[in-house]
Amino acid sequence: MDRISESYRADRTAAWPRPRRLYSREHARTDTTKMPLPISSAAPTILVCRDAYERAALVRQAIDDRLGLTDDEFRVEGDLVAIGPIHDTEALNWFVDAMEAAGLAMFDDFFELSGNWPDWLLLHASARRD
Image 1 (cartoon, helix red, strand yellow):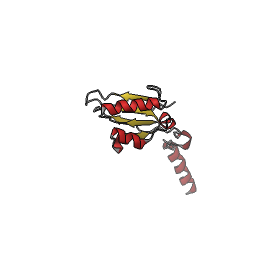
Image 2: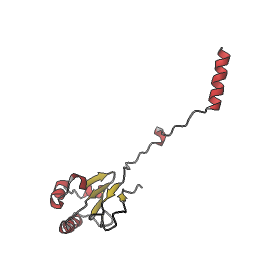
Image 3: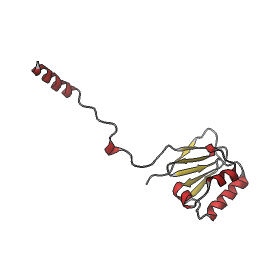
Image 4: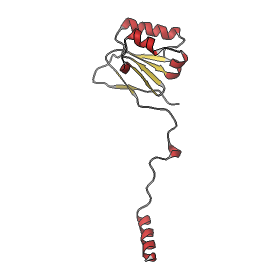
């Protein structure tokens, strides 16, 4: 019987090779990439690099109070901070001025997506991996 079971095992492994792992620790992602954030077409949204946001020492509570944001309108995912949609134009202008006064530069550190696109178009944003 030993010969039969050995023969059976040999035939089985030849016919059915061991499956490859789809995930291994060697190939695990080491980056902090997360899911892209949906962007509303209803009003402008400000996107800020997380490092720049932290470097400028902006206070979330002050931003929430001034812009009238809900919890869903201040989102952090990976290396990206999304603030908005911001429906108050004066508050938006104040916020952009406050970020520039804190030393952040438009395009390099933050960007405004206007929200001026049709409802049938769904946009998502995420920070680029280097």
